Length: 477
Image (cartoon, rainbow, N blue to C red; front, side):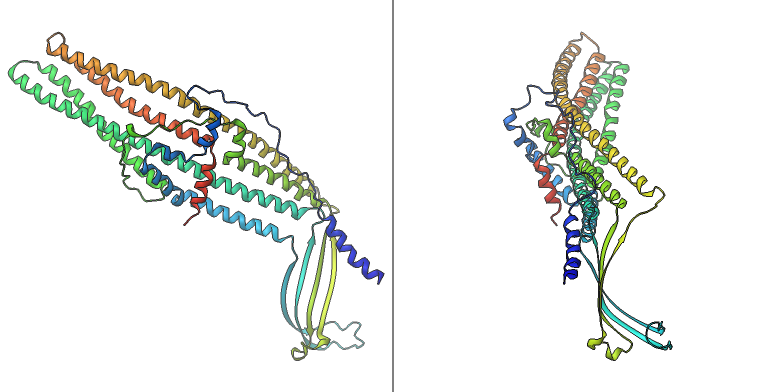
């Protein structure tokens, strides 16, 4: 009776101490995190509203329904997002595999054998030819005394979370790419409108100049000067149309579609400039998917060190069999045919030629690499955020100056026209004014787009709860 109690207590003790785990638990490394952004300016809103605005579905702030529809379509149908979702499913299954090792593995088995089997200790010197039939179940269970399975599960869980953050990172990238491409598309369409208007104006001027040349009022030199400027403006049209076509193709691919036209109902000047959020730098650690992914990779690497270190210690397993065995299939269900056994095994490394120690070194070096990657990811996140704020501030300044340039050149063109009609100057001055105005108008439209895209980049850099909403939406069929 006492022996039976001891036999029962042994596995219970092993199970109890199996809660211990080789290796150290993960602790987030202490990092030098900026307390505030360098590029803060008077355009930023108060801190009390910063996080709530950063969490807003920012694309809706442009007040363009087409843009909103494009982003919602992309997060559901973009191929890269669908691939990332499939990858998450793979890691979910791998996590299930790692988790299953915590439980006994039970198998059903039926075998039949026919031949001569040993008759040692059977009380006879004969070794007859006979059949043996076996039906039963077997169980194997590795006791996680050193925490190897626990660490494997921990590693698999971190890899699963990392894959989910990678998916969110792709959603973040796709949403911002769609918005930026759409803004560029509106900018190009505005530039095309400017080019067409300029060509139409110069074409009419050529018509008038030909009439005046026929009357001898002007020289052929003035006409050829005007014609050259006409063709300069005309050559911009196919160039802009090509870029529009390529951009529409790029947007179609982002939407998970074949190349096609993208219909727009708005114009660049009518897009609303969203408010600019400010973010507390430390919040980036909790919001950005790239940082979360890097940290989960680090957690996984930390757990894998424990998995490898457990190989230094003995592996303890329990096994058992319960079933029926007989040399006659007819009598296999008789009570006398019942068989069972229970046992255990210990496997301990004695000499591995440095295999385990080198595996530990590999695991530790991988963790070191991923720690440095984590640190660099955080630094890149702050750099990206600083650049986005800087881009927003200086592009806003640039746009204001370019607006003044356009207004000045409009005045210059009016005065040049007046001076030419009064015979004070040649038409070359008018052409110079028109050429400068045309170039400035195209540049202004391009800078308008850059300013709007800088706001997209700020929201992208700060991330926020809007990303969680898009992530859930992407999973809806």
